[in-house]
Image (tube, rainbow, N blue to C red):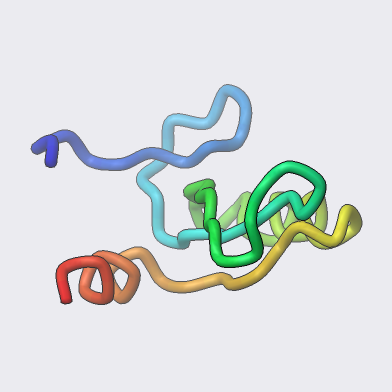
Length: 72
């Protein structure tokens, strides 16, 4: 893992990530596969809507909770 602070995935945003948006494109990924985007408070809703409209969004989790679940 890098010591760098994770940043928001929204284009041009340099804010610290607060949320993890787990998603999956069922046309190209197996059902259990999860890709992730990171979001700051300002962009969480926009990125969630973008993925949700396409049927890709699977879960939205606070970044610190996601990190904790990945270490288990």
